[in-house]
Length: 151
Image 1 (cartoon, helix red, strand yellow):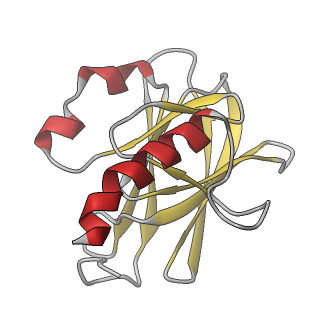
Image 2 (tube, rainbow, N blue to C red; image 1 turned 180 degrees about the vertical axis):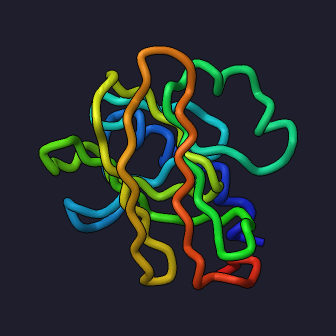
C-alpha cells in the first residue's frame, strides 16, 4: 500500500530529474530513468519512452521524433526495462537511459549514431542514421530472449 501511495511522488521526482538532465541512480554514469509517455530533455536531447498499448503507439506526438528505437526479443515480442546508450559516430556517449517501455524516441541531428541496449546482462547494438525528414525505425533484437521479457 505504501509503495502504491509513493508511486506518484517517485514518478514526479523522476520527471524532474530527467528534465534537469540528472541521473536518478547513485553512480554518475548510471542510466537516467525515463517516465512513460512523457517527453523529457536529457543532456540536451528531447526524448520519450513509450510503446505500450495502441493508444501510446498511435500518439501523434511521436511522429515529431526523427528516431524511434524499438527493443524486441527472439519471438519479435517487445521488451521493456532496457538500458540504452546512444553514441555519436566517434563513439562518445550522448545519453544513457532506462525505459520501462519498448520504444525510445529521440530528436537527433541528421548524422550517424550507434545505439547499445542492455537487457538481462545481454548487450546488443545497432548503427543507424538520423534522417533529415521522416522517422527512422531502429529495432534492437535480443534473439536469446524467447519468453515475454518480464524480469
